[in-house]
Every structure is written in structure tokens, then in C-alpha cells.
Image (tube, rainbow, N blue to C red; front, top):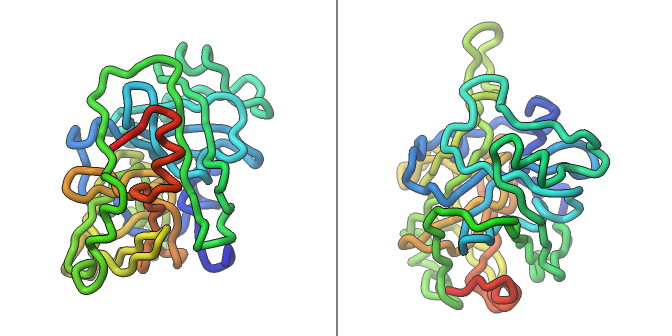
Length: 281
């Protein structure tokens, strides 16, 4: 199963050229500006380097994201709510003094960002069991943030959107994913671009619903939507009627132009765990 599914986190240390794959994700969608100021970029160290994902503030101190963005994190997590991180290098992000231990709170806050601690759903299957996927994590901030939190959907909201209704329903994903386009010069094959790094949104029609997973059609050529999610969008929210129903989990292809998979957070196994952090519909 893991060979087929691609986690949509992204390494920044590798400048996106080794871990990112071609895509027109929320990166091929629309710049978000300040439409979703509660969606932030999270940056963290883990075995293998420094990585980025997306996450959403759902209380003044709690952000919801994907488990594969929190599992194995070293030290603290950096949180950045800027809509545009950087049009080109540098990003302004600090480098940990000891990458093997990850960030400290002081390193993060001295650089002007928010610091938090990662927590992973205890039943996260690590991409091995679609029936018990549980790709859900949270980042608990050291201090409250003065941004209006997003709301999560009520229990079993998506059960009302089974086929054929699902195929006619448009979901909006938000995140800081990789952009793929033709370079300004040289071979004109679309390729992942390290910059710009910014928050974007994309609209996608529903494709499949399981007890754990929402899938969407993420093809920019589909006239029902505007693209799909890709590397770096992991953990970012999927909205329906203004509420979060899922977080970005995986893709099926390396060019991010097919099906996208999203961990439902409207299910009991997710909401019972989130309630322990004070997160309720």
C-alpha cells in the first residue's frame, strides 16, 4: 500500500528537488491572500532533515494537521501564518543549532515565529491500513495566537455526501504545497520549483468516501475543479461549507494530477482524540 500512496509532506533542506514531485496542487490553484489566515505552515526536524507541512488553527493554541507531519518530530515545531513566505530564497527560517534535537522554543520565537509541540494520533497506522488510517496530528502552541480559529465539522458530516451526491460536491483544500511549472529557461519540462512558497487554495470534486478517507479528483483539466493537493500541502484543511471535514494525507501519482486522499476528521476516532486537546465541533 505504501508504495502506491505518496505522503504529501516536503523537505525544505533538500530544496524540494529531491522530495517534491511534479504537481499543480493548491500550488496550481489560487493565491489565498488573507482568506484563510488560520492556515499556517509548520516546519520541523525529523529523521532525514527539515520538513514542512500545513496545519490549521482550531483553538487559540491547537492546530490540526496530519500524523505523518507530527510522528517522529524532533524538538519543537515552528509555525508561520504568513500568506506569502518567500517569493525567492531566503525564507528567513532559522536553522536549529542541533538538528539532531530539532528546534528549541527560543530559536523559533527569537526569529519571530510561533513555537509548538507535536502530538500524533495513537492509532496512526503509518500508511499501512486504510480501514484504520488515522493520519491525524496536532501541534499545541506554547502561547495563544490572536487569529480567529477555523471550525471543524460535526460528527459524520460527510456521510450525507455519498455518491452520487459526492461527485457533485466541491471541496476546498488550503496549503503551502509545491508548485510545478515550466522553468523560465532551459528544458521546458514542468518541474518542481522551490519558490515561491505561499498559501494557496484549490477546489476539487469528490470522488470516493470510506469510513476513514475522503478522495477527490485533483486534475486541473477537470472543469469541475481547479487542481489538487501536492507535496507540502500535507496536514492542510479540506473545507466544506466553511468547516474542516478532512486534512490532506496522500496522493496516488508523483505528478499530483489524479486522486488525492484526505483523512476525515468528522469521524468518532478523530473527534474523540481531538476532544482531549479541547477541539470540538
